[in-house]
Amino acid sequence: MIERQDHKAPVVQDEKQISYLNLGPTHPATHGIFQNVLKMDGEVIVESTPTIGYIHRAFEKLAERRPFGQITPITDRLNYCSAPINNIGWHMTVEKLLGVEIPKRVQYLRVIIMELARITDHIICNAVIGVDTGALTGFVYLFQQRELVYEIYEEICGTRLTTNIGRIGGFERDFSPKAWDKINRFLRELPEVLKEFEGLLNRNRIFMDRTIGAGGITAEKALNYSFTGPNLRAAGIDYDVRVMNPYSSYEDFDFVIPVGKNGDVYDRFMVRQEEMWQSLNIIKQAMDKLPEGPFHADVPEFYLPPKEEVYNNMEALIYHFKIVMGETEIPKGEVYHCVEGANGELGFYLISDGGRTPYRLHFRRPCFIFYQAYPEIVKGSMLSDAILTMSSMNVIAGELDA
Image 1 (cartoon, rainbow, N blue to C red):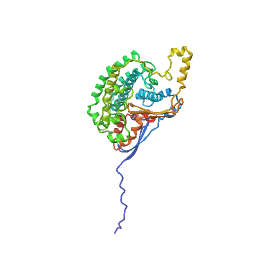
Image 2: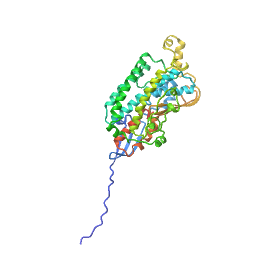
Image 3: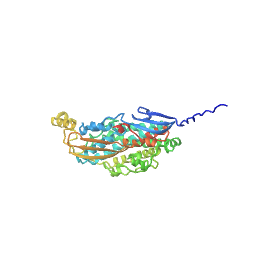
Image 4: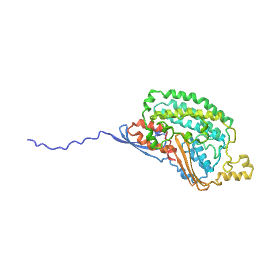
């Protein structure tokens, strides 16, 4: 008789095939230099751990060593897809500290520039969403229109991407006839292209299947994460700084705040599409009602003398030098000013101790706020949906890291 041996019970293996995947920091799908370490069960995301700071440039610390006028080029590098909004938002913050009254014409010109910038930002975001679902044609087609806006920037201030556009108090020069011609051309050509782009994607069954229900967030959670901008409006909350706290005479214009319902990729896409139409409407209104007057406020402490005077007059040369080097008196104070950036509420918290540079400057970057929700949004979704979600949230690395 063979003695029966007691064998240990077999070990039941966990069915999950856990693996780790680096999404970024230099993968083309991330559209920027940041990283997510994904814990994966097959193609399903179990957990996401974001790491940021790859292009942290210490802008807020740099600002403590720069005269107020020289901080403008720093703001270019936040959301470089819509740099003029950053520039103008900063100028308005300093003007608020100085108590400067800005001419109506300057306010309307700023509205035109900011809405052009909003359109270019949304063109990039929505065209890239199309690319991430496999539709490349719309991307190439829309970018022709983005190029037209860059030509407008170039005509107004000499630069295209990082614009350094305008000055504290207004603009360095009035818009030239050529600039107005370029703006009119853009207003003529964009609607037809935008309609064709919408015809390619809005009701496209493949696009809808890929985006509806992907990367959704409820209105309550969006508010808890302090979402603003298109990502918040896509969840059904109609908050827009231009309406809630009007600046630069936005109260003079009639426009609609588009809102979604589900806060998913499709709703974010559709909100941005409609915002482009509303921006076109605002630009047309501003041009129709554009008042006469100076193109800069009466702030000689910040507005450079004409070049002819600088080249031929010693006093003008000295004055030019003093302005550039920041040798002007700045009042003590503490202000916060925000504008409706392309991604949401872009704020500047400025503390001045009366010195030639800010005592402290903090940028409220919308990307930095809503990116915190990304791990929760993509948890349980497929990897391909995580890519789409990141694109539709429009996470800009420069704005995220500062």
